[in-house]
Length: 260
Image (cartoon, rainbow, N blue to C red; front, side, top):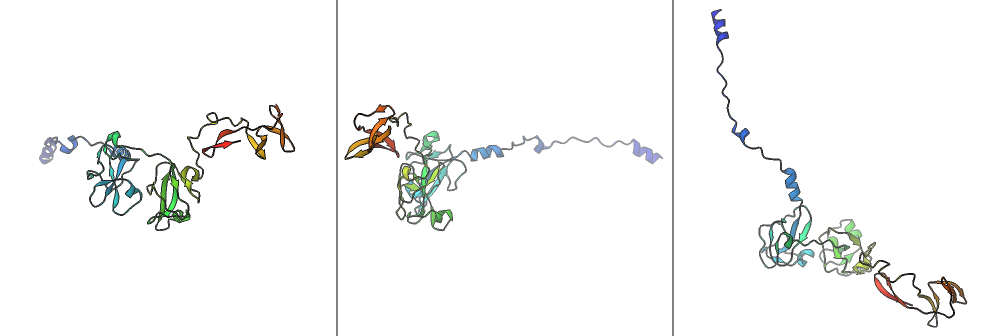
């Protein structure tokens, strides 16, 4: 009984509160989303000699020539000028939008050139840039790739060499091209020139112009509603006393054309 009472009356030593040094340190914020946003912000790309890291013009990289390589900078970095050695960048392409830089380099907005012009794409043999049928690129045939030409450039015909384009996939729209090639804006299938004048900017299509001639004399116009023996005798505005001839400039197929 004494032993039991002694055990029951003995109080345990008071617990000493210990500090957790780790718990007192500020918990780092989860920056995954913020870092992801930064990673997707974009980058500036330049072309360098892969062996020397000297910056060169863009053409060797656009044409995927041996010895040339793309080199990437973050948007807040100072971009190397042409002829200087590239540093503090990477050969690994980041995520985000791509920008190019002027030859003088720079930093921030001074080194960011956005290229958003539309392109026309042709399938070429990578080694020669000779144009082949699109099916080779559509099927991913080895040794062939899409070559993108600016909408203000020139598209080669089948069997001809493509120039002044790039193997780099653009961020803008890329159109398939007609097999005969020619002016890129005309060769692009489904392309509509946004700079073509609106109907109000050009001369009105309602203006009279000649549609039929006999012996170099106009015998019918676009306003003719009635003819006799091939000669226009009535128009929307009334009767014609004599055959008329009128010429005007018309915007057609992206060019001004003289119509009479």
